[in-house]
Image (tube, rainbow, N blue to C red; front, top):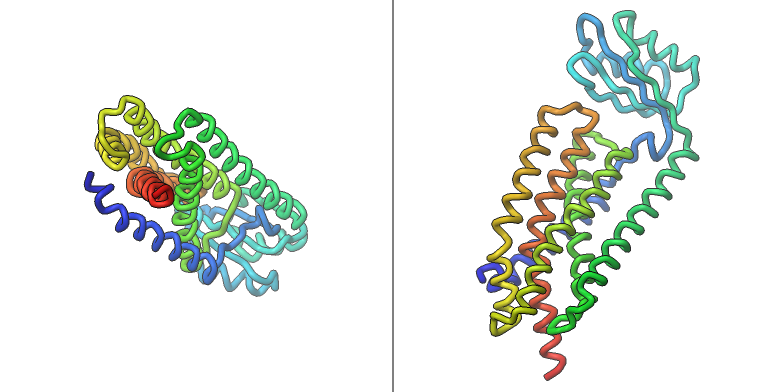
Length: 295
């Protein structure tokens, strides 16, 4: 009952984190990668000795390719993102880096392809969110008292926004410091977070539904509190094992999947937090508001 007793504190913490994330996105922005805005990605690897990143940057600047982003790739290479370049400019780029390199890959994406990816990503977000809402509404269709079934779905939307906005806000801050860009893997990570975060919420809601049906507890607040006590250990234990695996992937995995694993780690953490400390307290708040209206 500790969580329900201090529900206002946990709701305020969540509201503050979401607000901070929104401000972070507004003021720092999210850097779109070549998948979305178009451009060229060249990955190179040095055969014997890795040249200093600043030296590589100066060499490429002399080519007049405009804005670029150079990031370490593995222990002996770099990934170089530039505007969309032709074959002549690509050859000049490779030549400027010296003869002691191997070109691992070259990818070029046009602006029209990037715009199409943005459109499809937005559609995917909307469809996934709607699918989750309809599924919750259907699953809890027989729950009408004391909180209506549609309110379970509405609270699930709030927790989804919470669970996605906070990791994206944190990513915006990292992006401003380290220059990390959004790619298609980032979109996959966000969509995965949507599914992972709602699963824990459903487990808690389902236990509340069962306890309402059994009717062992006197008040709705007590029902929610006892339901949380019955499931929070399982939720935390399950999420912790996944988070440990994701942290291993973040620190020891390839650089290409680092952003993906970081997003999933943050999503799992805040998804577990919201199902226990946000979704259930909001149910009690909605019930209390409903009782005031009926008086």
